[in-house]
Length: 251
Ligand code: 13P
Image (tube, rainbow, N blue to C red; front, side, top):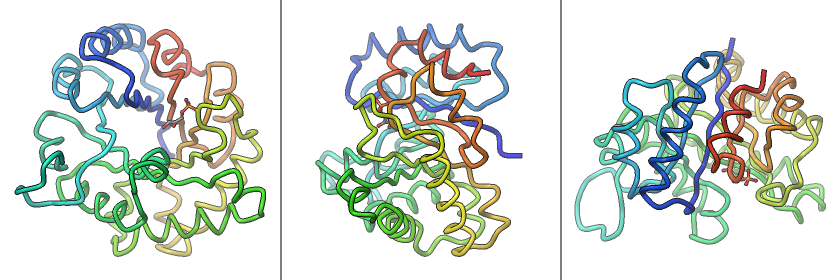
C-alpha cells in the first residue's frame, strides 16, 4: 500500500509572518489527519522558522530547490541539500516546471540535485510534465519519459525507493485547467510502467506519483480515486490553510 501524500508548494508567495500564520493554522486544522502524509514547501527565508514551529506535528517541510553542488564552497546564492537538512526540512522539490522554464533547470541539473538530496537523506520530489504544445503534438509521453530517465540516471534501486515523482502538466499549472482524472491516470500509469522498465516492477509499485496542476478541494477526490495517483502537489489552493486542509482531508 502506498500512503498518499498531499504537498503544498507555496512558491514565492509568502513573507515570513504569513508563512508562520498559515503553517500554524494548518497545523490545527489537520491535527487529526493520519490517512496521508502532509508536506508544505515555504520559501528559503521561512524554512527554519516553519520547521521549528511544526516540530512534533504531522506536517513535514520541504524546500523548493537546492544546489547541484554537494560540497560547501564558493557558490554565491546557492543553498545546499545539507543546509536544508540542517534546518529541519525532510524533502526538496526538484525540477519544478517553473524552474525548467525560467531558471535554466535541465534534466542534468535535476539529476545532480536529486543525488544531493539522497546523499543527505532527504526525499526528493522530482517534478516532470509536458508543455501544451508537446501534448498537442502527441509528444507528451516522450517528453515525460526522457525527463524521467534524465532525472533518475545512475540511481540505484534503493535510491529509487526514496524518491517521489510529481507529474505536473505545464498547461494545468495555475490555469484552472486540471487534467481530467482519466488523462492524469493515463500518464501516471505510463510513468509507473517506465519506472518498472528502468528498475523493476517491485520498485515501481512502491514509488508514489503525485499529480499537480490546478488541484482544488472540489477535484481532489476524483483524482485520488485513480489507481496510480498517490497524492497531489498543490500550488494556489495550498496558500490558504482552510482550502489546503480540505484537500488534505479529501476523504
Ligand atoms: P497550481 O495548483 O496553482 O496549479 O500549481 C501547481 C504547482 O505548480 C505545484 O507545484
